[in-house]
Amino acid sequence: MALRILVCVKRVPAPGARITLTADHSAIDVKNLGFTTSPHEECAVEEAIRLVERHGGEATVLTLGAAEAEEQLRYAISVGVVKAVHVSHPSLIGESDWDPQATAAALADTIASIEAADGAFDLILFGNESADAGGFQVGVRVARKLGRPIVNGIKSITVSSGDGGAVTAQRESTSGFEVYNLRLPAVLGVKEGLNLPRYPTLPGRLKSKKAEVAAIVAEPVAGGLLTESFDNAAELVVQTTMLGTGEDAAPAIVDLIERLGLL
Amino acid sequence: MSEVLAIFEHDRGVAAETSYQSLGFARALLAAGVGSSITAVVIGAEADALAHDLGAYGASSVVLVHHAELTDYAPEAWGEAVAELIALRSPAAVVATGTDRGNEVLAYASAIADLPFAANVTEIRSVGEASLDLTRVRWGGSLLEQSKLVAASYVLSAAAHVFDGDPSPDHIGATAATESVDATLPSTAARTRITDRVTLSSGITLTTAAVVVSGGRGVGSAEGFAPLVELADLLGGAVGCSRVVTNNGWRPHSDQVGQTGKRIAPELYIACGISGAIQHWVGMMASKHVLAINTDGEANMVGKAEYAVIGDLHKILPAVSAEIRKRRTQ
Ligand SMILES: Cc1cc2nc3c(=O)[nH]c(=O)nc-3n(C[C@H](O)[C@H](O)[C@H](O)COP(=O)(O)OP(=O)(O)OC[C@H]3O[C@@H](n4cnc5c(N)ncnc54)[C@H](O)[C@@H]3O)c2cc1C
Ligand SMILES: Nc1ncnc2c1ncn2[C@@H]1O[C@H](COP(=O)(O)O)[C@@H](O)[C@H]1O
Image (cartoon, rainbow over the protein chains, first blue to last red):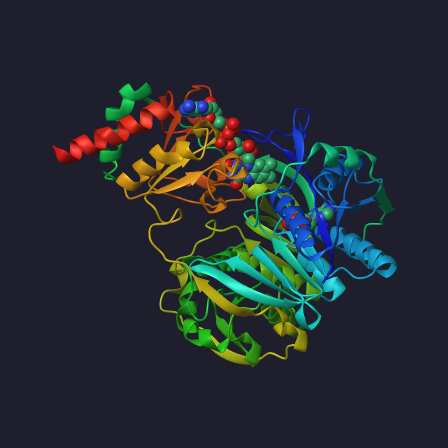
């Protein structure tokens, strides 16, 4: 069966050794940072493309965010997604975020309107959590608004076509995997490790530059979680003990392992 | 009476160490002025027996939630059950430990009850009329967020290992009154139940190993991991890696340590050719001791590690394994 799949992605900064904040602690200082798609969602995009390669159909990518977030939509197109939808609002500038309830409401409304025009999505994929906010909820809220089931933490997806379609999804547990079986249409929150995302090809890049991105303006609904400021987590200051240089340090390393009782 | 409902997580009647932290978090809420009593919520009849000692963790009562669909974990059914309790009891707060399941159940419950939800809270800073000032973790634990939660009932998960998971010193010998409640779940609640389990062989794993020999981009290739595997084997440890390594397909993602990989806390973490990006650091910062092996003395990992050796890991690791063999045969 041909599958209509939607993936919700979020643009996030890619900080290095430490996260630097603006002087007033209201935001991450992104002056010298690159940007990326949250890793879990990169895998969601890859999985959507693979499912379409296997079953036919098409993959669409959706984001809510500032104008710059179009870059992440075009990246998804460069690896094989065919449609992109950008939800924006004048209040969404830079790294500003909406409350999870407002984000979920806008995404759910957008999905409902796409579905009204083009037909329902069989599968909607989210990341287990966004890399920056880590709210652990937008996917669940959207699924509930659409009246569909969702399971998070998914590391393997198999779609079967019998009986109107179903998806078998696995998630890691302490002893192995838990298996869930959902009837389509369904929603899944996935984790990195589900697959190894491909890199864009040159034709893919060219296509993504020219692709049309559908633009929608949403109004935020009121939400109850208001972010006020950020702080770096306390970092312990360590005095590093140098055990030497090169292979000559091997005896000192083994001494250390022995001292710790690990030999 | 205003209660704090503390969801007590379990898997088919078996509790984990982290399960008790939701009660520690509930006690912290009471101390901050949210609610006046703690009601533990134990979902599914298989877990009834877990109720008996929860009084010692500060619960004055325990609600045992029963339903035919609650015999095994099912996120939607659990979320519906919690939302039902919220509607029935209007609690001051509903809390769980911020595990995969804890966050999932609270996301469901808050979505159904149309309440906001703050995940992975580390501190309640102050309590207002209908709002809380709280601190929660972002970026997998590398950044703290100060936020205000405005709600009729506060739905909160506790960042793992922040709140006390031990019995409460103020409740030694205390017992909780238990009460059984039959949930009335909608028929859709069964849509997300576990239908099967796959058990993997359990030997020494990345999360249980006392020594983890971990490699980053500096290892250079899949084959380059041979000396890391050799050293890990010699020490009865496990191999870990950075995201660059899994992205290159050198090691499976199950070996990845960090924000989107595993969180580990071995006795000794040997970071070979890993620069120490914040997203890697949050996965191994709980290690008791860290040894960095890096060609670059200025690498962040070297600066943050307790011990460091500057040099090429491909020369150093074989020498370490040879030295261990030598000492063992002496
Ligand atoms: C949202 C998000 C989530 C992420 N999650 C994770 C995560 O879970 N885990 C993770 O690891 N990363 C994660 N990352 C990626 C992270 O930001 C870094 O890119 C990554 O950790 C760098 O890996 P590395 O240290 O192996 O590579 P590099 O940063 O390239 O460092 C390589 C190091 O090897 C040293 N070196 C080179 N050759 C040798 C040699 N022969 N001997 C000894 N040393 C040598 C170099 O001096 C350098 O310090 C995430 C990123 C984002 C944006
Ligand atoms: N602004 C956004 N635009 C599109 N998808 C989003 C956005 N924020 C969150 N999501 C999706 O919801 C998931 C969970 O986000 P969160 O609740 O913030 O942890 C993410 O992994 C994304 O798939």
